[in-house]
Image (cartoon, rainbow, N blue to C red; front, side, top):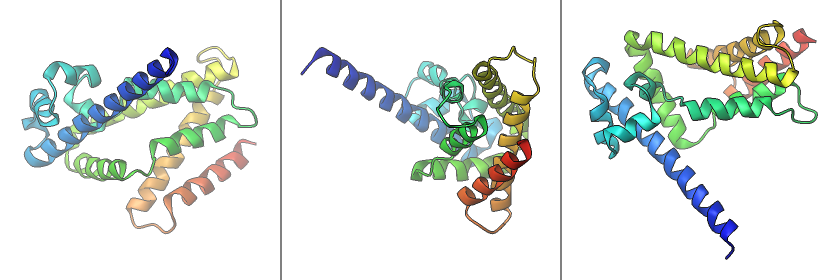
Length: 202
């Protein structure tokens, strides 16, 4: 077996371990908040529930608010890098559709985390500022990536921020429609929303 292959396998194992640790911390935070209420939970308790040290906790999340919401700096960088890449034949709006769909990847544990997170966010108004801040970070990261992709200076054009804001708003509207008992599958509703936005942008 070549050294390169061994290196690739080691990198793959490390990345899988990091994903598992991140999910364990996220789930531990959600479980504890559900059990005790957000104010009563500490980062040390979250780390202990996930089976890692308090120091390891801060390698993944800067605060207990971030652990509940679950979006990491690494994930933001990956989303931005994917959008910045000019995929042949794919419009910026189509790229955003693909990236946002990835955030909603329908694996069983993600569904569990999303459902639990939704319950907690609805029941813990004190988390609203952190959630708003998280959404702003996502929007800013994607806007900066789209500016780089389009070759425009930061803030020089409205188009990148408008496109990102519309894409995020479309997904949010479809999720809220679904949560409120609206008809149709989420994926199909998102497709239709992006088709309407695309027609308007043209």
